[in-house]
Length: 110
Length: 115
Image (cartoon, rainbow over all chains, first blue to last red; front, side, top):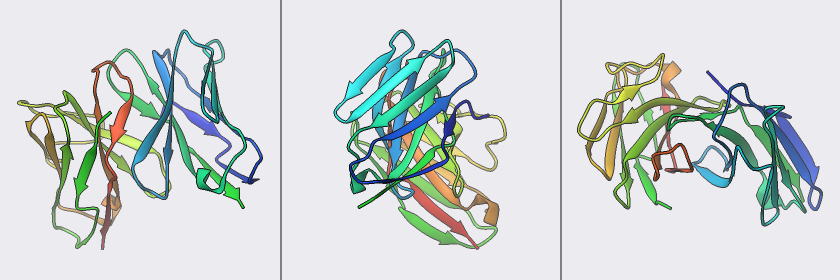
C-alpha cells in the first residue's frame, strides 16, 4: 500500500517563483527521499533526509522533515521551466524497500 | 551511483502474448528491484530480484504472471506473461547500493502498451 501522500497533486507556477510540495506518511521511517520523473521516464534521485535530520539543502532544493507530524516538504527556489516534472517522495524503513507516494505534477510556465 | 539500461524502451503487444524486459547495470549490485507504474499513478514494487534464488514478490504480484530472472549481479529480466490491456504500464528496474533502504537508482523504464 502507498505510504506517502503528496499534496498538492498538481501545481502550476511561473518561472522564478518558488514551488513547495508536501508529503505525509504513516509509519516510522529511517529516511525520506525525493525523486523527480520527467515525462514518464526513469526517476532521478534528488535528496535524502534521515529521520534524525530536520532540514537539508542541495542547490535550489530545501527539504524539511517533521517526524512528529510524519510529514516532509520539498521547496524548489527560483524555479525554471526545466523543473517541470512529477515529484515523488519515498520512505525508507527498517527493511530495504522504498514506498512511494502518489506524486505532485509541477508545471513551471516560462 | 549506478548507470542502468533497460530494453526495450517501449513496445506495443497483443493481448495474450508475453514480453521480457531486460535490465543491465554497469556495476555489481546486491539489491535490484522491479516496479510498475500504471498511467498517471505512482510506483508500485513488484518484486525484489535475488541473485541465485527466487525473486521475492510483493502482495498482489505472483511469479506466474511476472517471472523474474537474476543470473548475476549486473543483470535481471522481468517477463510480463499472458498480457492484457490492464498490464499497460511503465516498468522500471532499480538498484540500491548499500542494502539499507537508501538511495535507489532507476533505469529509464519500459513503456508497454497492450492492445
